[in-house]
Image (cartoon, rainbow, N blue to C red):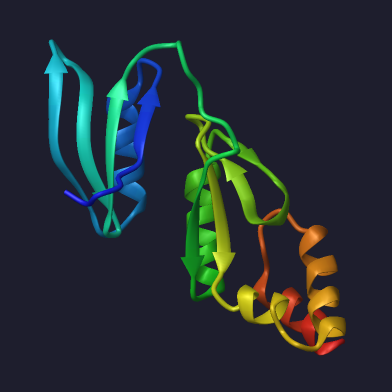
Length: 150
């Protein structure tokens, strides 16, 4: 086990959540789970190399956008796929953020965005930032046009 692993608390729907997440990520695996009858009450799973532990602890705690998971995407197709799947039953938010149907926050971001926003040409970076602030799901082509000044 890695030294630091996210530990997620779900509200009576851990089994459904694990099925949901492992269906979205290509390299996903449930390492182990514990059940009480037919209900999954705890689990360890992996999504694209990231380990997670989870508990079905009930309504005592909920997720907050103060903690989110950042998905680095190389292509628009990858952004579109993650956005469509993770936002199903959830909530679309600004600047590449979404909240999934379990209330967990995700950032679906093109890897090139860092290059645009950290560019030494502040005018290009600022145009890109302004374009991003207008979007929910990020669009690489629109960001590129803003960066280029078109």
